Image (tube, rainbow, N blue to C red; front, side, top):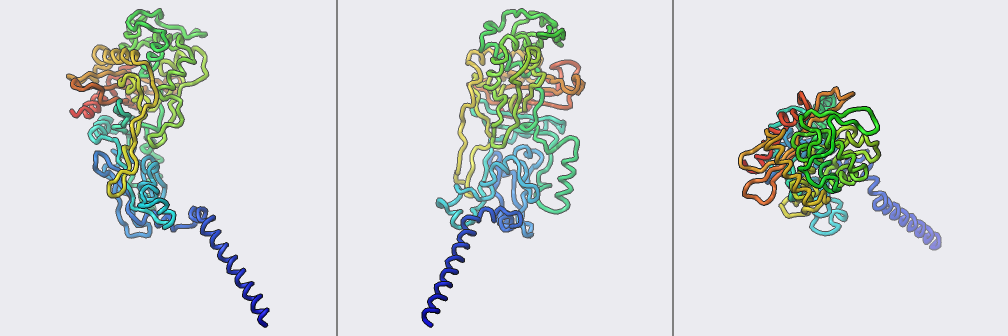
Length: 485
């Protein structure tokens, strides 16, 4: 009898061990898959059970959380939502997260291990800390100047501090209120459907996710390549360039909208924006030289993050000489984001040292203790210092004597370059107006800001006029704000 009891006890013990092992397998090895199962709402409920951390601009929160009393308790709220949507993105209980709300989600939702009081604390307790805060580099006055300048027209503005890479403004227009997407229910799905159906694409972040033909603003990159390669040694010397110019290997002529471009010097070609001179210089630099040069400015980089991903600005790596000529004046397949063109102006302003652009200054706990701080770092040496000095002078001439006079600010050194980008089949689309610039106060040893403006719905009678007439005044307002004026 005792023998049978022992066997039964052993069997029970074996079953108990098997049960414990199975429980351990489920809780340890399959925990992640169960957590991530779409049918499991516990994590979703826990995610919205506490307020989300704040995104700060100039020390003030531009986001909040509202307790709805529902199962998913806290919904995201936004202050001046359309103004800051290209910075914050949205945090939606229905559609997920974008931009900073996505890139810094672990901090904002309280799941980042760096918010925990002890290592592995979150893993052991399977809990989360109060949502942390994200401090941005955006300057409120600069952001508002850019937003008001666009005035609802389709376009974008990016402004960068050249010496650090801090992004001071990131505006896309027309915009939208991300708070419309925060919760659940028919009102949210109706707003999503309406925003996505809008032909003006208000949810498109034109500053970092849309690329445009940069037109004549790209001539600054070509000029840098020509000077660095020694193709041009004296910017004020005449070039051997006919007008009109026959594209290599073709019978197609490239005209100029400006006058006096035949054999014009590089400095004159930048000042009045000669297509022929810059196209010829691009061909003389050669495809390899141009590809190497544009890479230093950030073109063809698929991994640029600020921390949100930035669309690749394109310069083809395989082209015939006639295509290279057009690409060298910002046409053919050359495209750029507004942030990319702000980086071009920034590199010139900062003596050729291009700093990596960034949007998040630091992240903190709910109480304000710093978790991580983003530091200034060099992205590339975009050009030699003497080249940058020469281009600075040329860009100042554009504003003081050329097509960019609408960007001039009394008592301030301003450099700029206008551009009108043709697009559409046979260039039949209404041109995009571009302006890139930088500004330096008289009592400062370095420029305060570099700006790129693109206006999509700009009327243009000739190349560069719309850039000077439509985009330059917006850039001037942005620069004034950055200078504290």
